[in-house]
Length: 439
Image: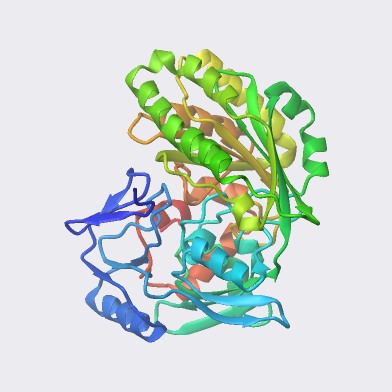
C-alpha cells in the first residue's frame, strides 16, 4: 500500500484521507529555475501556489485550488561538507532516502521523527519532530535554507545571511515562500540502543521527570481504557550492533504492530463496544525487547495502518496533569478509543513558530483509525490541551485560529510581519493559512 498522498482525476488527497483538493493545474519543476517560472506564471494568471510533499499532514496546509507544485523531481543531495559537518539536500527528497544516503556516507541526523515517508521540506515546514532531552525537531537541525519568494527571487538564509528570515522559515508553514534546498547539521554515524518495555501509566507519570532526565530519547504510548503503556528509551551506544532479528522484527513490527493492529482496528470499527477489551489485549501483545542499530533504524518505524491525528505541545512540566485529565475524560465519556496515545518531548528552541519555541515541551498525540468518527474525541482532547496553553502541531488536526495562536506564540507578530514583507499579495495563501495566520 502506498504511503504517499494520491491524485486521481485531478483531485489531490492526503495520506490520512481527510483532506482533498482540486487544483487548477499541477507542476513538477525539475530545477529551481523551472520553479521560479511556475511561480511567476501563477502570479501572472492570478492563481495561488502551494507545494505538496507526500501528503502526511492531516490539516489542509498544502491544499489549493490554484497551482499545486509536486517536488518529486527536486530530490537528492547537493553537497556534503565534512569540514562544517553539513549536508545540503533538495527540498523534495524523502527523509527515508536522505537517511539511507547519509548512512552510506557514514553520517546521520542527530534526531528524527518516527515516520520517514515525508519530504524534507514538508517535514520541516510543519515542525515534524521525534523525542529528545537535548536534541530538537528536524527543523532545529537546519543550518541554512533556500527558498523562492513570491516575486520569483531565490533567497538564501542562515544565521548570518538574512537571519530574520532564517529564524522563521525553518518552520515556515509554506507561507513565506517555496523551500528549494535545506542544509542540515549532521554528525558521524553512531549507534543507538533501544529498550522497549511495558510499564504502568501510574509509574510512568510518577517517574516521568526521572525517565526523561536519564535518557537521551524517551517516549511512551498509553493505551486508552487501560492503565498500561509501552515505553521506549533510546541512548547512544559503543556497540556492538545488535539489530532486531529478521523474524523477530517481522513479528513485532509487521505482524503485531501493523497486521494484527490493522485487524484490531477493523474489529473496533465494526463493534465499538469491544474496543476496551481489544485495548487490554493490544497493550499486552508487545513484550520487552532491546536492540542496537544505526539511528534511523531505531528512531523510525513502518506505519501501514492509516489514521487521523491531533497533537499538541504543552509545557513539559504540565505533561502529567494534562495526561491524567485526558484519561479521566476518556473514562467518563463513553468514547471507544482503539489507538494508543503517543507522548514525546523536545527541548526549547529559537524558531519563531516552533511548537517548542522558547519552552521545554511535551507532545501528546491522539489518533483515530481512518474512517472512524474522530471529532468528538479530538474536540474533548483539544479542550484539555488548550487549557494548558497547548500549541497544535501545524500538520495535524486542530481548530485553532490566529487569535488563539497569537496568545501562545510570543513571536507570532514577528512571523506575520515577515510574511507581509515576503508575500504581500498572498500568493502562497490558502484557507488553512488564512485561519492560522489571519488575513
